[in-house]
Image 1 (cartoon, one colour):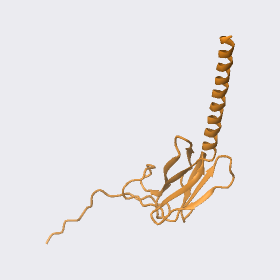
Image 2 (cartoon, rainbow, N blue to C red):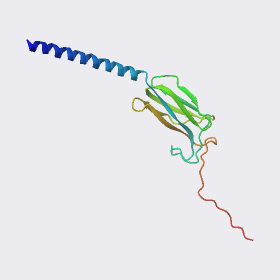
Image 3 (cartoon, rainbow, N blue to C red):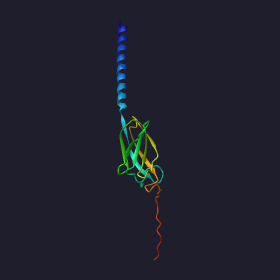
Image 4 (cartoon, one colour):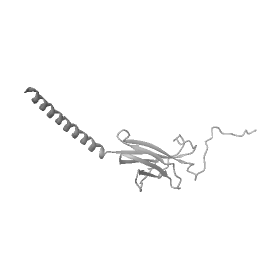
Length: 151
């Protein structure tokens, strides 16, 4: 008679464990369902064309930043601050396409960012090719030639 009671007790314990694990799985799904992250970064004029923000390359103040979620038709539009920086908060986890445009309609290349449990925050630099001078390329001189003056 001891074996049937043990079998019933083990069965009840197993059912309770399954119920607890199921409740934990549902709670985890609810936590990540409404989760959100943010994307921050800068928009700058890529004067040397290398795609990286370097010393001497100015940020684009007042540039429009477009953030479009995968499957969405209308992007979120932000404007960079006076220093050329932006922050988009409370974005649902997912894949986003991001690009920028300055006041002269010069555009950056489109970049992709994924926000998820691992990458809940992302920082991105958006290079606008050319320069602040209407698309003209600017080169920095490393030396200056001064003519020799005879007296």
